[in-house]
Length: 96
Image (cartoon, rainbow, N blue to C red; front, top):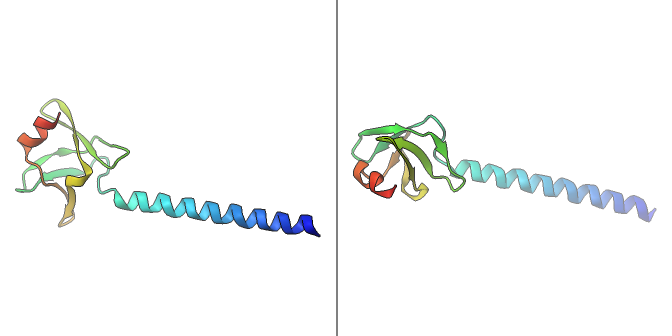
C-alpha cells in the first residue's frame, strides 16, 4: 500500500514540474518582442532592417551597413504592431 502512494506522489510531482516548466517557457517567449525576419524601425519611423537572429537575452541581432549589430532588448518595444527601438541608426552603429 505504501508503495502505491509513493508512485502516486512521484507522478503528481513530475506532472507539476512539467507544468511549471511549460509556464516558464511561455513567459520567456511572451517577453521576447523580437522574432527572426521582423522589420526593425527607429523611433523616428525610419526602417533599419530585418532581425537576423534573436539573442538568448531577447536582443535583436541584425546586419546594418555590413556589420552585425545587437539591439538591446531594453530598447525594443512594439509600437502600432511594429518592432521599434529607441536608438537611432548612428547609435546602433556605435554599439558594434
